[in-house]
Image (cartoon, rainbow over all chains, first blue to last red):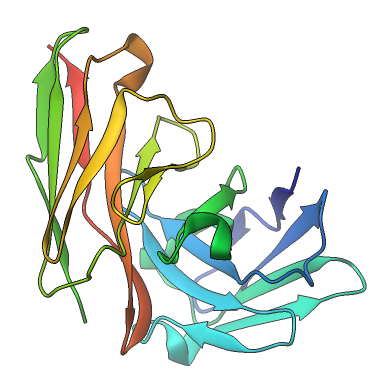
Length: 123
Length: 109
C-alpha cells in the first residue's frame, strides 16, 4: 500500500526557507492523484498549504501563495515543499498527504497521510 | 472562501454513549464533505467522504449525514479508542482551496 514519509530540517531560522520532501513508497507519484502539503501549528487545527500533480501543475493556498513552492521529482518518486521568509508563525507539524481521487468519491479528501514532521522556526 | 464551523468545541462523554458532532458550511458544499479523526501525536485519518460514505476499514459505528450546509458525524457507541479530535473538510472551486473546520474534541467524561 502507498506510504508517505516526510523529511527535512527540524529547525529553521527566521527569514530563512523551510524545505521538506515527501517520499512516496508502495505506489507511483505519477498515478492519477494530487499530492498535498498540510500543516498544523502546536495545539491548533489543520491548514492546507498546496498541492501538485505529477505533471507539475500546482494549486496553492492564497494566504501562503507568495511564499510557497511545491515541486515534483518523478525520478525519485517524491515531491517537495519550500516556504520562504519564515517566521515563528510557521512553526508547525508539516504533513504530506494524498488526495484519494476517485477512491473517495466526488469529495476531494485525503486518504493517505505521512506521519508528519515538526518544524520549528527559531534563531 | 467557504468557512466551516464545528460544534461543540468539546464533547465530554462516557464510553458506550452516542456522540453527535456538527459541521456547518458558510455556503452549500453539496455532499462534498469529509470527516477525519486525529489522535495525539498522529496524523489525521479519513473516516467519511461524500458526507456519508465510510472510508476503507472504518467501523460501522461511525456514520455521516447531511448535505448543503449542515452535516453531522455520529459515533453510535463510543469505544475507548474513539476519544480524539474530529475535523470536517471540504474543497471549494473558487478559490481552489481545501479548508478544515476548527475541530471537535471528544474527551472522556
